[in-house]
Each structure stands twice: as C-alpha cells, then as structure tokens.
Image 1 (tube, helix red, strand yellow):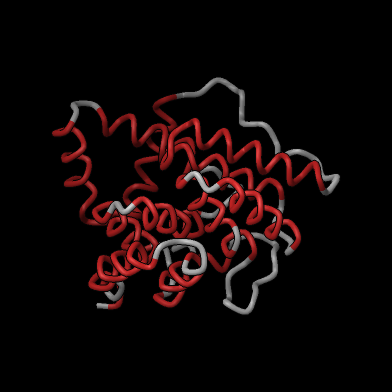
Image 2 (cartoon, helix red, strand yellow):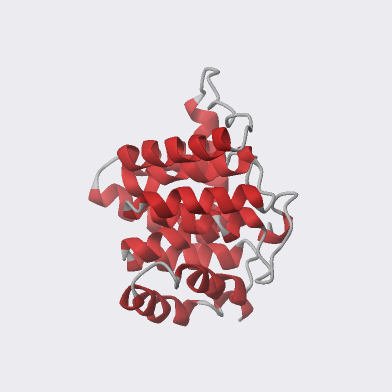
Length: 223
C-alpha cells in the first residue's frame, strides 16, 4: 500500500499535505477548468514552498487525462513560465524511448487492480461495453504510461485526480478515485482536505455535490 505521505522531499504545510499536493491539486483542478491565472499562481506557490519541478511536471502531464491536450498544453506552458521566472531548469522532457505496449499494459493493469480492487474486471468490462477495446487504451496509456510514472507516487496522483474530478462534476469517476485513494492508503481527512484546498477557488455547489458523492465511500477500506 502506497501513501501520500511518501510523496516528495517537500515539507508538509499546516494541512499536512506536501507542497506538491497542497498546490498541485489546485493547479490540476484549475487547468482542467480553464482557470489559467489560478494555474500560474498555484504552480508559483508550489515552487516557493519546495515542490520540485519534476513533480510539478507530472501534475501538468496528468491534466490531459482529465481536461484534454489543449488545456494540458496551456498548463505546461504556465508551469514553464513559473520555472523561468525563478531561474529554474525547465521540467524534464517526457520519455522518448521506444514503448512496449505489453509492458505498459501489464504495468497499468497492476496499478488498476490496486485502485479498483474487486471491481477491476467489472470496470474493465464496462469500458469495453461502451467501446470494444477501450479498456486496453486506458490500461496502456492512462495507467501504464501516466499514472505509473515513478516521479510521483500513486496515492498522491489519486488525491489530485479527486481534485480534477470534483471540478469536472464527474460523480461516477469521483467515487472510483475516492475509493482508489483510500485503497492506496490515503486517510479520510486527506481526501476531505482536497475539498478544503479547492474551497477558496471553486463554486460551493460543486464542492457540496462532491462531498455528498464521496461521503458514503470514505470508510469502505476500514470495514
């Protein structure tokens, strides 16, 4: 079981989150929502509080899974601007070595099973019912090539996925990643803390919907 406490060499703030989550979750949510000034501000605060460029690059890369490539590109450019402003090296480039799709798929499946547990086969089946073969695409790319990258631990990624899904108002996926965060070791107060991080920046009804959606599933891994 991997926990968000193992993420990064950053210092936890008063909310207990390391800077990469405390500000990265807001940056990711703002990216997928198209809130560019908030994206820049959040990445700047993350850097000022000790988050590493390579960690924040992972946050920026994740955005295409939730908001599409156009907004992900904007987020990456805004991160680059914050790095340049501080005279820091730009984030490392994405891996360019040849990919083995079978390896990606197996890596993705292993992580998918950690996140979805006993529901893994059902979720994959639902994906293929919607579009035959779509589960392979999800496993190879989203989980095998993005979520499995070692620069940011899986639990931290799940917490930030929760942030993105809150602002996107995607309740089914929010439930899945709430459960996933718990299975990977996130504490209940950490998941609820994501809503606290978002509260100053996003609509109250959006956060209230998320709270109602998440609440029944927060204690599942304790039973």
